[in-house]
Amino acid sequence: MTKLTPKMASSVKGHTTTTATVHRAEIEAIQTVPPSKITAPRKVRQVSSDVSGVAGGCVHVVLYYNKASQGDSGSLHAGWSKESLAGALSEQPLLAGRLQKGKRVGDHEEAKNINVVSNDAGVRLVEARIGVTMAEFLLECNKEAEAELVFWKDIDQLDPQFSPLLYIQVTKFECDGYSFGISCSLLLADIFLKENFLKRWVDIHRKLLLAKDGIPEMPLFYLPNLKKDIPSSLSADISSSSPTKNSGQITMIFTVVSPEQYVYYSEEDFNSLAMLSVAEAESKLGSKLGPDFSLMFVTEPGNVVKIEKCSKYEIKPEQSVPNRIDSASWDDFGANELEFCEGNRTVRVSHWIGSVSGELVVAIPYCSTNDGVFGLKMVLGVV
Image (cartoon, rainbow, N blue to C red):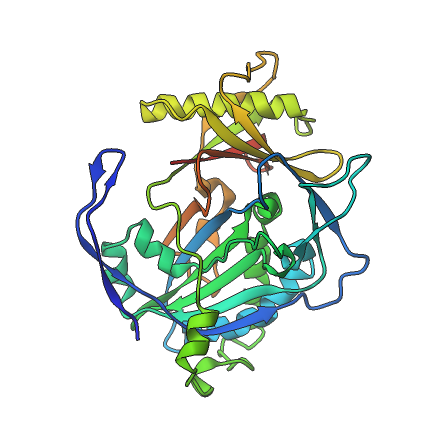
């Protein structure tokens, strides 16, 4: 059963939170979803890190929906998601891949370098239930509460090859709605966001339902029709999501607008733009951040994810970088417009960066052909 846990008052940057009740989600099923077809040849993305340990961290997205009809339900969408996800993953197979150690990159022995390999190991699809209506949940909603609607396990430092890089959790509320909680490794955040994986998945999902002439057919995996008695020891093992590390974290986002559609950014450019973004964040927060932060970006050409430890006192922003930095929001990625059922828009969308410690800047390539805006999204996780 869903548990209600009292949240104790705590202090974050001098602000004391009030005591509240957190509704805990109950995991009912976990599946693995591979791409619908074998990936050949396999795709590889190198990861080069100055930071000790395998890079963790993820971007969380939660999409809330009311029921579109009497026959609509979270279990229905969870069941059909296995088929629709498989189709979307066949187009972006790295999201269904795993990390591998021990390769060589160029002329350097790879002590801290790993690869993301599209080995078709699959993503995790979680089905959960929470004992409160969506309307009641949203009235009391906070970061700790929303963490119940996503599932994420930190990358295993010793055996990263067993850690999924994408999790989907479908949560059923009492009576009035459901949510999709998506957690994607920051190592693949540019593919997830820039390539608009969510939109492609939702389009495939919606077409599957439309192909049924508007009559929701039961998917092959439909939990209410299956035996639900799971031994408590097994349930505890499969549902042990990593505890959230960002209850006091703020996520900020800026757009680096480029004067041209195709711009090559050097490592020095990324460092300069990250420093300018940190300065913008400090200005908006009205306080100084710590002296150090981590920077994550993808090099072109090469498709290598680089993670660097940076110091504000060592980076001198290049004034020659022909860009401007504007405030932005997650809405720019279009999640508010996603419809799993035709005509059923989101009630609410939440985004945040999770499972990171310290300040982090992630540079994500961005383009909007509608607005004619090209450049980068600089996403800052601020503790």
